[in-house]
Length: 366
Image (cartoon, one colour):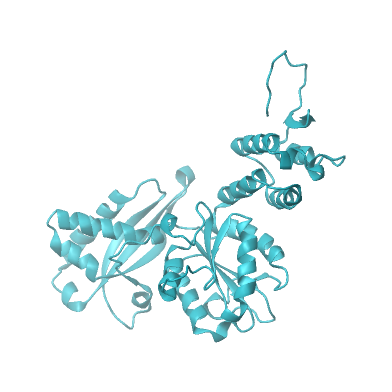
């Protein structure tokens, strides 16, 4: 499985910090070099498997000829060593680091230069401040043909039940906002892109540009094949998940597991399913929420186990739901399966089964 590196997404912010630090220290030349450069990354040039693994990346600064020429070999070595040291000094709580920095000529014919990014002087917006993303959920951008936006929106609604907040232009764009800016905001702050691949998908320049942005930003991409054609071009190598235009809920169930795998966000998505179950507003919805949660979760962490028990015992739309507590005893059976322990319903509430009589007044909620 490909490693989901966070360093590429963090590098623009690290460079902005470095420029500010250099300016504060009066090192204008260094700040100017970073601002003049296009930046490329060579991922995983160094790997250490000790203690969970650590990964070293190289950062390449592509500079115009007149900026690069004044640097002798020794000066280049000194400057690149300092850049690597300073970047690593800004990296905390990560198993990724900068192995080396390099200064290279900005050559339009060099494919690696073409793939490099310009220095981003403005901060990437904080997703928590953007109204079209639901707080705490995984952020997915659905690229689609405008003719199929209704289907893409249905898929987005289904995915939200799995803890995934989706951007679907133009349905997601707030009124009175400039739509191109909102699309760029969605692309900048997404965590993953979902390609809603219909047979006419490749006829749109907008969908192609959106995919190009995701590739350039090194964001994970998953494809849902909704017609006869298979994805081509730069995403042709990505295994497409079969989907149905008439069954977005079925597509959402498949995508949930794929997105969790691609993002390494399984615990985060699992918690969202548990919270949706915990807040069930009706017996009817309890059935659907329980099925969704149990199809995805094959084990529970202690905190998740505690949350499920507390929610069941406090929400009458759960403990009084016939689907969970009838003769099939689905709630108890599932808890036993995912915890390896033995649960029971006692007075209509869920608890660990007692192996010996409890003392008077003992309270054993889970």
